[in-house]
Length: 169
Ligand SMILES: CC(C)(COP(=O)(O)OP(=O)(O)OC[C@H]1O[C@@H](n2cnc3c(N)ncnc32)[C@H](O)[C@@H]1OP(=O)(O)O)[C@@H](O)C(=O)NCCC(=O)NCCS
Image 1 (tube, rainbow, N blue to C red):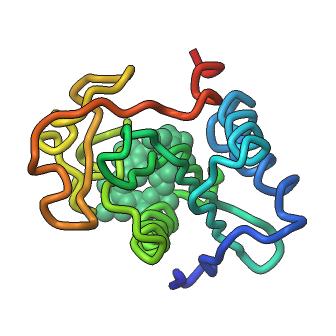
Image 2: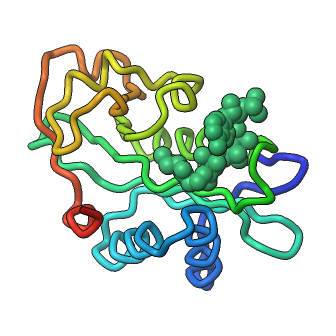
């Protein structure tokens, strides 16, 4: 999966420094890049993809394991980053779509994201499904997507984020 500007591919050994640079540039701070590195170090990464332009990594998306108490395999989408100057060219959307496919391939049943519902809604994330989960981040910006239809049909349950998220505050 690619855009005219960048190829979307799985993170490879050796990408970490370029990912740190891209995520820091997108957010204008290092907290989200630190989160990526903690999740990697803690072994919590389900999928990590980059958008590779000709000479640099210009976007990144990460999915990490959520603890559902054994209810189903679930992952959190965070963070998503596209370097300023490369935004509004479809790279963010391509990362989300490729990330969803990668998670489906890994038998993840539910994805959760905290972010603009208008942006994530186009990929099928809904507030109605997000509201079936109890998380430390419950709010209108918490949406969810079922990769296995009906995975959230049995009623509300709690999910725990990897401990790396606690450092985000
Ligand atoms: C959010 C972000 C990843 C989007 O990446 P992108 O490559 O620009 O996204 P796309 O080009 O695929 O945009 C898809 C749609 O998202 C919307 N969109 C993208 N950036 C937006 C922004 N800054 N504000 C509002 N809507 C935005 C637009 O509707 C766009 O559709 P359009 O092209 O028809 O206008 C990027 O702006 C970014 O890295 N921002 C800083 C970090 C951040 O906030 N990450 C998300 C945390 S949840």
